[in-house]
Image 1 (cartoon, one colour):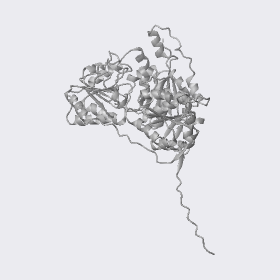
Image 2 (tube, one colour):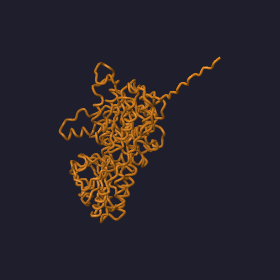
Image 3 (cartoon, one colour):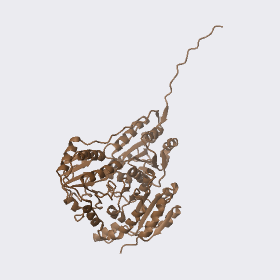
Length: 551
């Protein structure tokens, strides 16, 4: 029998594939994401299936507004990217307010939302969560917004989102993924990560700035939120010590230098007023270094703050230069890089002729803290007691409430990335979820939410998140049964106060219904004892401070 030769079948190399959801999750992992704040829905089922095979943790808030604030708190406490994932339609509209706050305060937040399948975009034919243009809703409050239109595009889109987050001013970005793109299959490829080096200052401009310092007598430094990082803080302290400069901070700049540094005056207050004692230090200086601050309208009282001239202005955003104060030197750079460059030149001999002495600064500090208006008398004893109970590195999230306005100057901050305040957009209800996000970012540090009784009711449901994860955060609620700031404004304007007095729940009973530890206190000493106990506990606490109503 003759043998028959059978031709060989050519081998076919099969291309490995993945879904768009799997590509998205792998891209997040490659860019260092370890936790996302998200409420699941039928429009994120494919993402949850992909997350099941990932090391990324999911945290369940009770409202998408909470998810946004948690991502923001994570970003502020760590300097990394906080990530929130929402469902189509109401999930996105619910998260708009915290994202606007993150935009105003320059916070690195990535929001990912699903949207309708590609064939249905822009069609109002009665589908669930439909909108005429979902992408347009978020564009005004983010730095960059993009909708991917294929699974193959996800890899590069996520890389660009992270590039935008780290390049230039750190503001939130938004990525939108149609539902059918999450299901679509694409060739598997390695995730793309774009390294963004810190922006370095121009050497020629650094030389000019150093010459201004050498020609000066004494130096005033105003540090803003852009100077709040571990490296910037260390360099700023070194700079102040090297040239004897007095350092004040803006609201968001608290933590840029330890408040007990001998050359630090602290934050001048929530608003600039002409009689502020810090003006004496400004008048006694003949050059200003403004670092990481846009010298905005509220910070400078419409440019009436008497900053010494000439001005050396350091900021990552060139749009902030020359808006209210002409800069003799405008240095567009990462704050730490600019400070390092200045220190090199100072060590080479470019020093002012004279220095501020710590005793001069301490004299002004005492006058700044001895303001005896109604707010100071009412809230400072509580702030002093709380600060005593907390370690230096405790993260405190401050809500828009009377005690936190006073805390701007009366609550010292010693470590960068341990203070949050919704300065830019001025939202109510941010403190509790921000503290939760911060605790996930820095589990080694106590996280404290300082709330008013009105503000906490915007996000009070996030007590459920504390309960679910037994997260050891401390929630302090200052209760005067009123929206006090608005009541005062009404009275000052001659308007009869209305809709400002509150009927509140029993906050202790509310917390206990979630199985949280809770206690009611009525004097600062009791607050200090309760907060000291909560710091060393490994479970969540709520401390209800009974202020009593204003006369």
